[in-house]
Length: 157
Image (cartoon, rainbow, N blue to C red; front, side, top):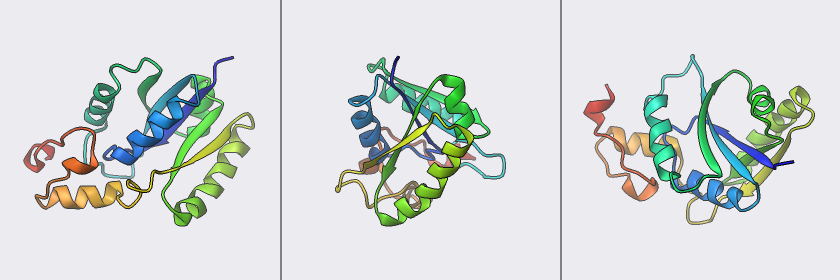
């Protein structure tokens, strides 16, 4: 049976920290599905379709990594795609405190689902998508934090 891991998140945007977790996860699992969740109650900075295309281009030469979008419960989407593992990155103890009850909830919904935590590499753990959005929104250069370039703010609407 293939070991399929789902790496869920909003990825708004997908950072070098996320890239690090996916690459390291790909060494542990047969397949990693980057799953961009859509939440109708949140306003995205970058359209989900655009983010999906940018991430897919990063992994174009890695057949074991795919990018999908989904709505609804992560645990249900994992069941739908045959993933038995959730891959999550931890930057610090606050991330763990946030992620632990989510992992319990996901396992309640899908008892075959196991959450696997990877510590973010120390050089990448200090920056979040929120910080990147704020820097970019006000005209700062965020290229050092991302595996691709973001479109100009004017193009984002």
